[in-house]
Image 1 (cartoon, rainbow, N blue to C red):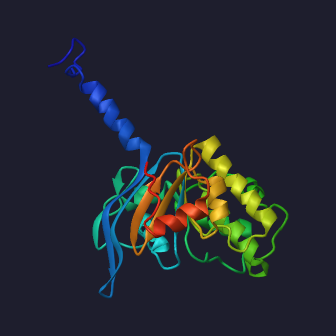
Image 2: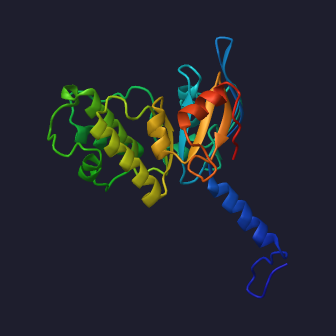
Image 3: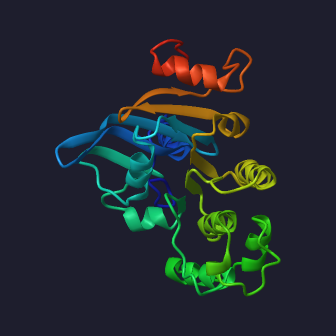
Length: 267
């Protein structure tokens, strides 16, 4: 049926249900369902389920070799799952990968640059690759503390400077989602605080969703509002109660007890 203007009439409640569906789709930025990854007959990711909400800072924790980096690569489309489904922004990484990547920034494993070029030149190349123009490169470099390096080639950068440049590259195209694997590697205490403050600002002021994998629990404790713990390729715990009144008092203790199958706090 149509109204006098030729528009389709919506049955009572249908609009409300549609609105609820849209809200639910937007709220969950990352959804993994029963994701498995097998390398050479070795199942490294086992029935992995993960949910990351819009605007959250998700601290992704696990022992070395537990599967953190592999999961991030699966979300970023750098690896294909053996089975299961991965949706980002409600879109499948199998069929909509290019659309998703336009809205995603990544720092996974050791960053690679054009070593004989400057930081600005490297970022210009990245923007061209992403098909983005008109953004202020100098401003982004200032945000990560690389505003006074001139035309110094990346080959002359320290490890910490390269990490800052990698962070700049991950945010230069103004993504809605950031995937960060050990982002504070190589940074001194001052640099760690500066980058921590930057991530908090990106989340609070711009609504950016951030997933951070790190082995430095004290940093995750200060920045994350949601925690996911992976053990032997399976996410065994997710909680949003990190900073709630009845939540986790000590992240290190919570992490260790979770690995032992102890304390049980869920979302």
